[in-house]
Length: 282
Image (cartoon, rainbow, N blue to C red):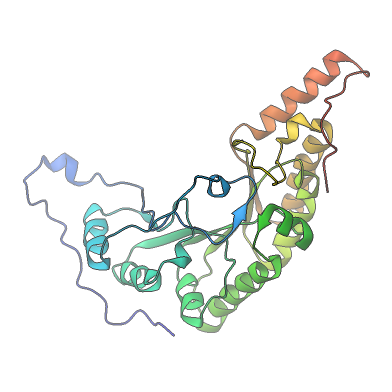
């Protein structure tokens, strides 16, 4: 178990180039570093699943990362981007080095791999972990996130929370991030309840970014194009469930606006209006 001992020396705070004193107090709120664009899942709505997609790892040493990031003095440092950081050899050592330097470390991860005890302990020291997870239903999860298993995600969240309790450290803010499609939107209230049962702090809904259709792969559709009435009701019910369970709830971007506009358009056209799309799934 990593304890955070043997910390690096504190980073210098003086400006070597003698910049105007007023600038010395300015620092970025957040710095993001994408260690890899690789992923071990093939989610049907993600660019990684496109036939011509090729992922790669960032070619930089740990010490270079630590020194460059610490020199910026960010309030938070996110070691993730489009890929899955936990696939990168040495990610734990990098995270630990940043934590030892006093940085608040965050990550977006699908948590869909077997985590070692050291990885779990390292995650337990983070400020925030955003878990990409679109559903509470194992079958729907596999349908959306090809190559993944929902129970592995749930087990990793439980292990991280347990490590915090065992070591007496504050729990990171663990949030679920759900990409809303016609396949999973009606299940959002159940996802919120499932997340609350696990002990997460928030659930966010992300607008679907539509990519070219992939041969022989189910095409995800924006909920506004399929069943906007049901989707809007599910989104709002999710908000009610979150409030009742005491967790935060964030429909991101213009998702709710798009659903409201689609419902208004249906009402304008009258009872005979149809959208012609497949039925939304629960």
